[in-house]
Image (cartoon, rainbow, N blue to C red):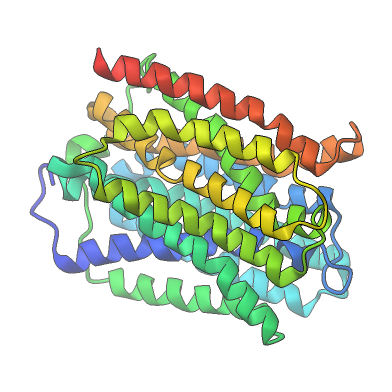
Length: 397
């Protein structure tokens, strides 16, 4: 790393393990979507379910934007560990909400605080570990960041699979217990580690203009991508159970397939980078995302198998997009790479918030069905196509 000794194996292991843990933690809430909206459990409406993720998005945006400044003042290790503590707190609150599920206002308040803590965890952890990965392997930054996000994707794929297993055992809350143990164990593992980044990278952006003009096209891409990913990642299980009449296990399977395709795609593109460079994947993948939304909006009822296939296509389309937005942005604005990672994550989370919250009002106020909302998200996917083409053009010039 710049201005730093080479990372130890333990430091590399901690950073990449954090990708898996953060992925599982992040998707724990949407993976349990069918539980939250089930009358037999929390009994939330779609609007209440969507509102759950608003504080998460807001806190993720704030923490990711403040991350570079906190890193400069406290050090990357402290920011990283604070993210792990926030993950642990989110899981403990989710577990606690189960004990007061009969008291709807209190249980819902616990869920809102839990998702707030999850937003803090995501905003502190993800930009930091992406910057670590790029600095650990500066000669292969694209591949290093993509590999890290592959493990993050693995975690997101494991969460709904674990939920399905725990639902089958009658203890769906076993997942937050598992994540709490993992986050606590990783936090203890990092105590003796140094885990710092180079001094130049750790500096916050300039006082007057933290981001150069070219940053905003990356911000737009992250925002549009956040909408596209979240429509699938947060609403797949609801769409499967409500529109396609799938049972909870099948709905969870669709989400597993989506995140599994995200992970598999990242692994594939990292492996074929020599023959199929990231710039080509960056152009190709948004078209797949667009096609997946078109297909999903026209699926007939009572066809869960078709829904699973559509979400698999969407997952493969989403796979390498966010890691490439981050790594391309950090390369083009290397002097403020930590700020770029935080800014990209902030706008990604802004898109996340729009998609997580927006579905409920569109259903209640505009009278749109979920399949029509999926179809409307094709516009965001088309916008992503346009912004990626602009990024590739600026990258070449």
